[in-house]
Length: 68
View 1 (cartoon, rainbow, N blue to C red):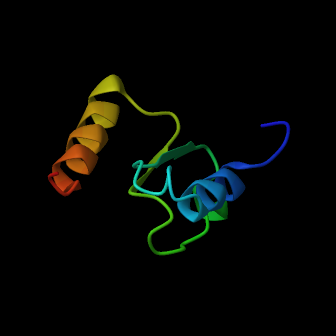
View 2: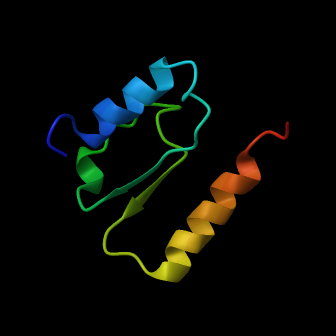
């Protein structure tokens, strides 16, 4: 991304009251470079991934969300 990388964007979203509850799934080819910061991402999906793998991760993330 031209202005900030994925972890910076995730931190900015978590810091913003309006956006902090939006689930974030990091999709990356650099799994070893993804910061292991608790609460930054709901899931990390390594590239390449199949459509089925993406759907499983999204189903899992949606299932974890609090109701209301």
